[in-house]
Length: 350
Image 1 (cartoon, one colour):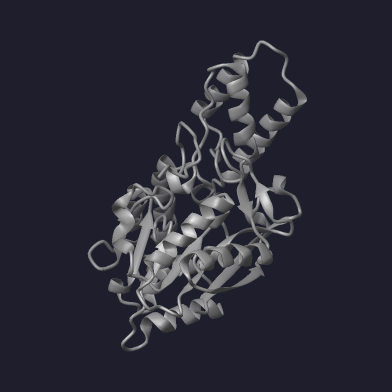
Image 2 (cartoon, helix red, strand yellow):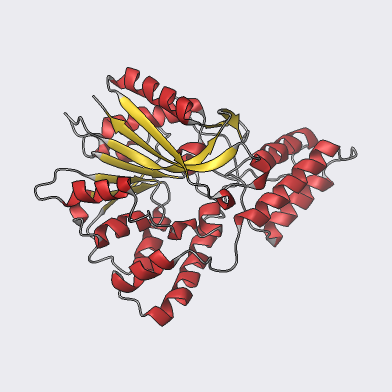
């Protein structure tokens, strides 16, 4: 079966299931222009902070074109520069009190050392992935401890005799797993998966818990049907967290991911829960064109249709709930007023 990957070269972010950056290479004006335009329109892919290497690639493309630049190309380049600026914040944000508390109480890091520790770890992560979740410090974001869905998850995992198992899809450094572990969930009930093994190691460095976390991690690509590393998850989980994940992919890719997630559920599960956050829209459809397929952004109705299709293909039924978070700073301004971050919950109803 062919891979569902987007085609790209020169990875500078999460690769495979987590997106990638298009290489700016002077291989011909038309090909280079196509790569630049596709990348500049992308919400989540070419998200490097300005760097000398990156600027050289842009200059290399510009220099290969003997024809005058068009207004479209100039607009695309400006769009890319805007994305670069948006994707990287040099200073710690103001809203990381919860993760500071977690590092103090769970990781036992002295409070006066926490900020420098975070800065050092971010530099390690940035060296692996020039991705907005790293550049904009989103890997420090925890779930709201007062959120009803989060509280339901903690209860299900912590209640005596619980058979629930939690999967963090695209876990990055695994901050959500640590939040649950600190809340009393057993490590044996926690699984994280990511396409980048180095992020899992960075998570251990951030939280200093390699010997006591007790969670399992699986490195693999959700979009590659020939990647059998994730087959060990089949029939193991009941709760899935997908933070900033679905909005990276086309409708077809999301459908494939959903089918695979259903296969990960324990046999006989009737109360599975899939929740998380992503960029939503009031005008669902393809956004952020890439070199192959556009990512599909959802409103509540389109996300329900997606899960209706997944349910039809897997003989399951699902109910979608979506809530806008109002945090407009999480969305690039170029996406306009139609796009906004949302929290979602997908309940299995049969």
